[in-house]
Amino acid sequence: MAKNKMKSHRGASKRMKLTGSGKIKRNKAFKSHILTKKTAKRKRGLRKSTVLTSADTKRMLRSMAK
Image 1 (cartoon, one colour):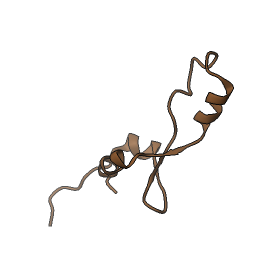
Image 2 (cartoon, one colour; image 1 turned 180 degrees about the horizontal axis):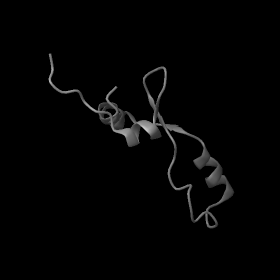
Image 3 (cartoon, helix red, strand yellow; image 1 turned 120 degrees about the horizontal axis):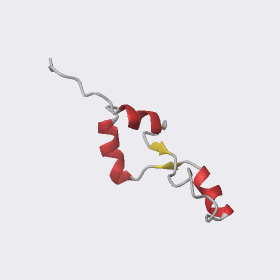
Image 4 (cartoon, one colour; image 1 turned 45 degrees about the vertical axis):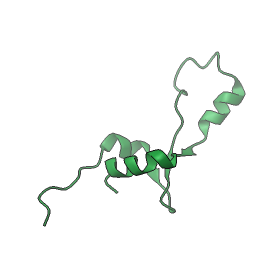
């Protein structure tokens, strides 16, 4: 039996969510401050969550220990 277990990266686990199909959902960045110069359309788009790219998914699954 293995000696050690992989610990999940708690910061990543709290920020990302696994979907039923195994993809990872995340929120978009750049929505916290300096919002006056950003257009309403851009801010509206930042509200929506998005799926992590396939290149990053494998790496994030490992850090989330899933």
